[in-house]
Length: 257
Image 1: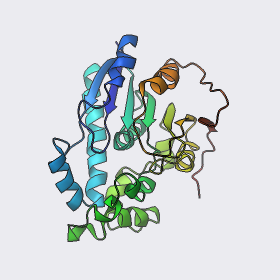
Image 2 (image 1 turned 90 degrees about the horizontal axis):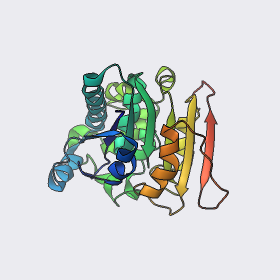
Image 3 (image 1 turned 135 degrees about the horizontal axis):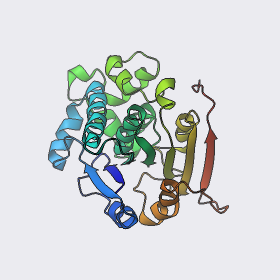
Image 4 (image 1 turned 135 degrees about the vertical axis):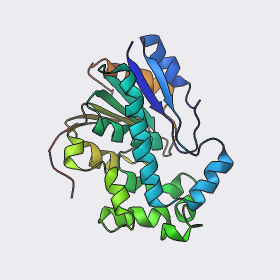
């Protein structure tokens, strides 16, 4: 039985997106759900976001990705799939960069570019970009400020960021197959950021299955139409439509400037 690890997004829960079971369980996949730390309840999460440093966020991603890999050791040496929604997507892609047994990585409403996402948090919840981490002096300006500084290698938490920096060439080369499903107008995971990340992955496909202009979960229809054939290693084709944008990205083996 093939295994699929699903990781929910920021503000999500262990039982988020039941569509995962509805779509993939009938295909014979065993679904293993991964709960992101501090998501026991909204009060716990809100308090953590208000005091979280950029370094703590990076360590959360780092440790949760390692948790997936450790849990997967129980069925070694079998290959497996990771699929993550938003924040869960960053966790999933970091895992895919570390474990060669991950044959397919699917990002839902996630660009793979953590710094870009953190700088656009206000589009997820108004004010979050300015408030996240602001109730902790050690956060040194909060998540948004430190994410911006990390791009230039100048974050006060650069060491923690480098643990999960998805743009490292040797890490990009480790991703075997990548699919990004999103919304053409998603401000947190815009197509330009998706291209910026995926262009350096050897086998990657970006499909903007929606054009609603917002950050939202990827529904059952899109999962069935695109994720299922992706996992079956079948060609992904999309009819020309203003609602859909498909980008096939060939590896250039170089980082974007």
